[in-house]
Image 1 (tube, rainbow, N blue to C red):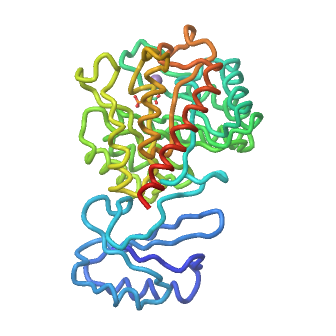
Image 2 (image 1 turned 180 degrees about the horizontal axis):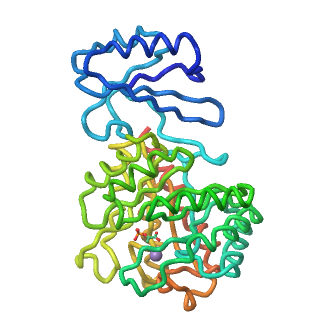
Length: 367
Ligand code: PEP
Ligand code: MN
């Protein structure tokens, strides 16, 4: 059961104190408080954990500071959509709204290789009105002998260049808790010129200890990729690990699943799941066409499969696109074959605009 408190409630106030005292008297119920700082207001949700079936909604609604009460089903308690659940399906970060009603493009380098590539990428983004990017510093690789990313060494120049080119959010995978400390230190060192969305990669979707640690770091929103060899429901439960530890600013990423049924694509494209995730949960949904498709093949009309897959996600209501670009793909240290070229960026963005408008028209048709 979730109690949604009046906005901007002060945790030091008498009303809040009275509420907590009354809740502490509920037998065998654990209370967990979750506070989300938005641009305009702070929202406080109180989770009652345990057997809440005997607790009446009316009784909870009558408690001090309680505005609304939601009885949650077992599945995806925090992030799920429940009956009569009008909790928001968006969050704010660095002045941007990430929700099931918005769309952000995170085009960028799969792996940071040099300050020059980062600068060329960021300049192209800013010339095309983009304020988000992807920049891999920590790369989980199949072979231990492959390039694993420049790690903390590249963070200062990535963040400074992001600031210089007006990039507000950089999506960056972390594979270990020490990476979060390194990111925080580099942001402090550079004066916080940008924000970071922590990415949990498909190889770590069920790394539960990592999920718990990332979930306890409330500062950064998280992009959780779907596990490439598990069911959708298992991946949604993984997202819930982040939220259950306190971070519900989670974007759910579809990136294809491993199966040779998807050949010749690198993964079997699963973007038909976009509406499913939007229906079952309140998370914004990201699609990653680059890791799903995995190369630069195209249809006979000349549109690349990566762009077709992007369009399939966006026309189904995707809220974020994570996509690999590189100024010199043949020199890229990771995933060059699937990278789009900088001069393809304007066309890629135009294509997305067409499809997003089509999605909005499809929604309007239902009204
Ligand atoms: C990535 O986005 O850089 C990445 C490695 O993706 P995934 O975890 O989906 O393979
Ligand atoms: Mn990659």
